[in-house]
Length: 325
Image (cartoon, rainbow, N blue to C red; front, side, top):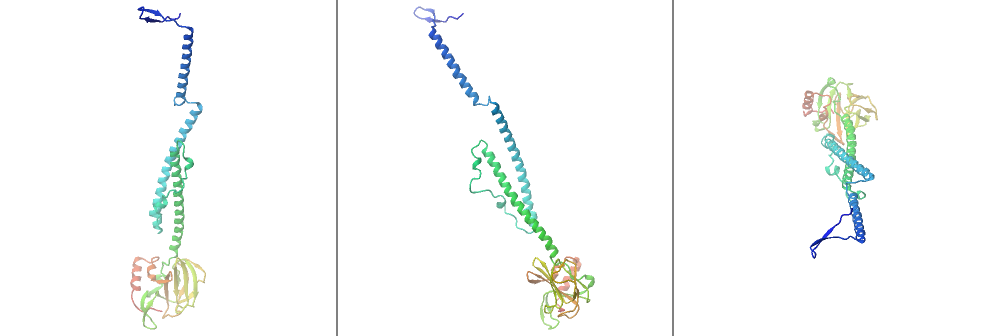
């Protein structure tokens, strides 16, 4: 049963029933339907543009985005670890390896240089996570460049190490006559009295007196460049090119044990003590040339002498006496 609604009539001072026409009923129904439709559409739009309700596709996309963000976070942490490892290698490279092999350190600005000029990351702009993606991409590019720089540095260190080993083996660093065969050190490097003219002149080597036929040893690895008697005053002599600017000379030999072009190693017997050329008695005249300049051989006898033996040799070599050639 439909409820009857009343209104108050001030003229009659009484309540009178409200008469509802069919037209009014239809109007109310239309208004209700319209309001319900507008309300429903509004609620639907609000729900579609909020996180309250998602379609299966949107749910899958959100999961994928969350997974990508997680992977980017893991990648960031791994990049940090790689940067720390590379920084440690760079520090050892500059402060240990390159110092040991006497190479200049690589400047920090060269190692950390970025990429100037054209925007390399314009195609990554305009996305929700552009800042994150561009940041990681930049770090990867810089890390790649630093790795290339470090790789080239290690290649250089490897070459320097090989050269260092070859240099150590090549430098003339032992006495050319063993102490057991040595009679005495007759004359050293510097101004000495010429045995023939009795005048003071510069003596460019060291004279070792020993019996004729005593073995003479190569003082470092190298190649025999000369083994002949075609050098004024030196008689039978040998020249060994050690590389790195070093050449050693052995003069007044009685005979050779090597030939021109032969490779020799430190400690090989290359000839025998004699008295050929401009000489006053059996002895070995020994010289070291570095970059075409004759230098004091006594500075290189660290390979087979004890500190005590070296001190004695140094004292004898510094005595200004008469040379034997």
